[in-house]
Image 1 (spheres, rainbow, N blue to C red):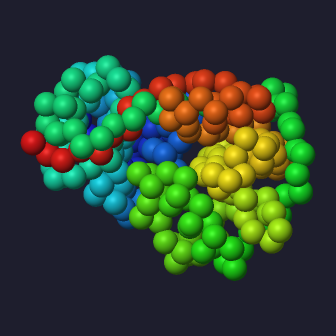
Image 2 (cartoon, rainbow, N blue to C red):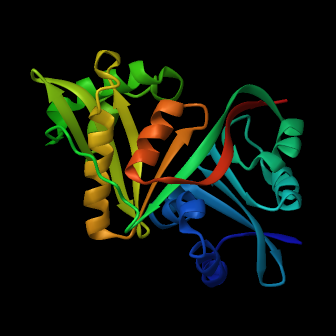
Length: 256
């Protein structure tokens, strides 16, 4: 097995490989296409066959795909002190030998294909803009401080040109929010969050349904990630038509 850096010479086999399961490889494809200056992808090759991939983006975000032996070899090339890792469970043995746990979560990738949707839109949906960014940040920070606690109003405003934000409002105040992105032939729902006082009323279901309807006008596949122990969110996504596709461990680690 040979470890090589992805470059133009290997792009044909890279794209052929990731297109076989784009939801599974979405961030590899997205970062290589849109964030190439901040992205390094290593391939584990046996002849012209890809046995594994490692994505390193912004010298912090790391993802592994493929077989365990490829991950073991990739780790020999990984020289970062702190990382956010996403990998299949079977790879964790090797990862834990190099990185000391700080926290970890089991993460489920769910997928919905056109024709599988079951939409439930019970509330008016509004498009959000920079004037809503402060409320968006507050909802995200409160809903999941572990993942979103560092998000700021300025960061949300800066990213609004490449994503679509929608929400539901109650008496002029944002009750629930949703962020989507269309890329690589997939509509990815990246954020769903609701104020605690407005939960269990169907706001998230309406937002996800609206997002899926919009996505399926443009492409045939929608994806969403959810913590595997977040049963209320999983119920919402299944109600709309999403089904489990892959499971990963999402981990923040410090080097041993």
